[in-house]
Image 1 (cartoon, rainbow, N blue to C red):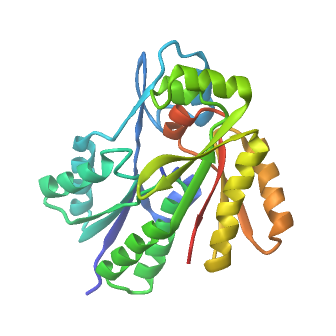
Image 2 (cartoon, helix red, strand yellow):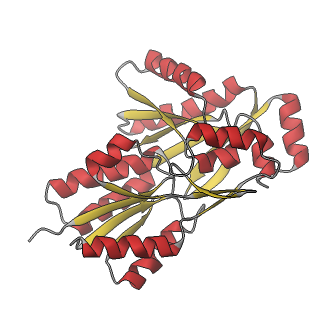
Length: 282
């Protein structure tokens, strides 16, 4: 007898509403905590409202994981609906406690949840859900599907270029002196996920050089692996993202390139205007 499997993620994946509906994905919202309270991403405010609020915030907002009580409630509801288990793909455990809370909530609800630490965020999480659903529909065992997704976590890349270091300074990620000098001298940094952690990979003068660095990461991967699709990710900066898309297509005419917004929780730290690239190696 086939197992009835539920699929869960959080808003770090920032799934398109049509994708959520088509694949019946349950989404746990991350929280953005402003001075006047906590707001659930995608539920309590739109992206446009978030960036409007971010620009005028007198106190820099913080981010927080979904309350464990909401996870327990969801798992109990899934159990009541007749699901045998769930596969939950969550944002990197180095950035949020969501993955660990998922495991704890599973025990509290007495409901089997295969919690997966994506070791990343955004586009790769979408592909993990997409591929996992396809494998389940092809009648693969849940354990085999989970093992395949966990392997995908080691073949996923995401690098972005903050528009400035101002937001990173407000978030406590860089010093005020670093932020001031980088803005004064037009110094750009490239930030990447490395074994689940967010690390500063490169520091260069001018945005063009930062983009070249990220492009070289992609070029190197395309030489040794199959990379059928690339996402141009951005924090409320579709104009520059679309320009980057066209540049990619000029160099790689057969490559599938999509433009995707980043979670508002990334926007809190990286800042409005941020752009980057993300892909999965096959």
